[in-house]
Image 1 (cartoon, rainbow, N blue to C red):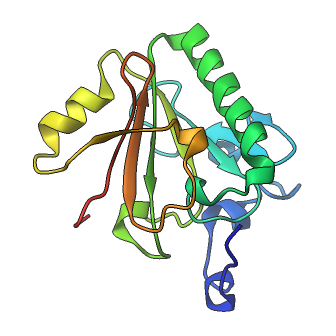
Image 2: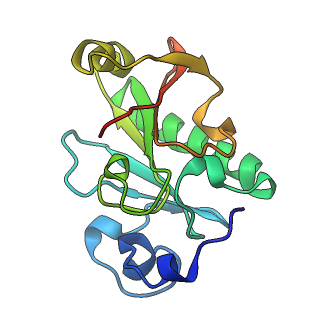
Length: 172
């Protein structure tokens, strides 16, 4: 895993400071619904649809492509478990990540801690992204759980029907 600078450690991380990495008392929206040894599943603050969950590593890392190879299998299993549970309860699911390449990047949307969104949607998120984000070039990629050491801002969408697609926005 990439080392985090001491400057970065001094910055506020809502996930780390809210307690997903400890046994602190935390507010409902950061209350873990499921925990594995190195990952936590929790509801998304400000979810636009019912059943919107986040999968986050307990160890502070900027984006999921930087999760260490030693934790990769566990990460994939937690993603699959989360997806399965959301499908059972709500139906069709898309997973996505807006991966920041540096702290404070607008692609990270204000949260400099890796987190994959697992969302029940009645439509293809990838198709919607293509229509709404004109000018982005999407390409096929490995699943979110298999991304490895990406050093640029990225957005990845994994729709079971079409597989995973990634783009590298030049602007937020």
